[in-house]
Length: 190
Image (cartoon, rainbow, N blue to C red):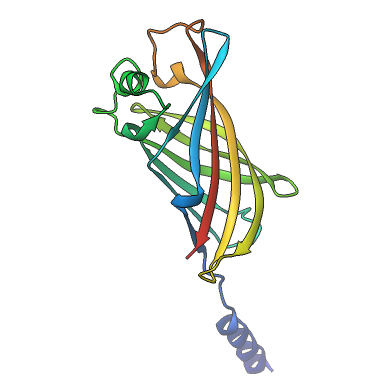
């Protein structure tokens, strides 16, 4: 009897198949990483980072165990104004020559509702790393023309630029301290 139980347990353990995590990467043609900041307390200036990438790794279909890594090239910043973009890349703001990347690495992804999440992680900007929390919405999944599964996410949150040393010499009246980051991303399952 003991041998039978041992054989049963061994068979059960050997037949257990772990679910390998899936890796999802950004589809650059259908993704955007942007920001909004208030100028002179009367208007919003919007911009984007033209070059960025993100990877999500998850074993669960609902992404509740996901890990997220994102990187953006600071030199790719665009507000559709060359003079302002040059100033933003300067040491007054991002200092793109010294700090060429903005990165985010998640530490927790928690379901907060039906297809909504709180994504907590470490944002590194201008050499400063701080914990931040973003709101995310899974907008859905579909199969593209290449027969690959695609997931769409909208992610948003607000950071204080001065926490990261961005534009420290510029007061809140000129450029608001609060900056809203917004990402609309399609990620392809590899």
